[in-house]
Length: 71
Image (tube, rainbow, N blue to C red):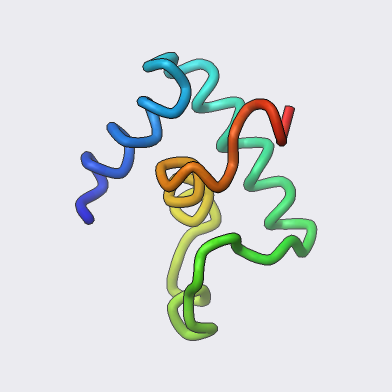
């Protein structure tokens, strides 16, 4: 999926509120940086190539991370 599509889908999860999305991405990146495992199935090699913010955006877009369970 293209980056624009992922961001659009993630925005839908936050009622198109860019501020909420940025707060949610930041919170999830902090968790991932602290050692949390990604909630989507990625190979170890794929994870090494991805930025933490990309993983967080994908998780939000897929509905795995929401405001209610994170903030």
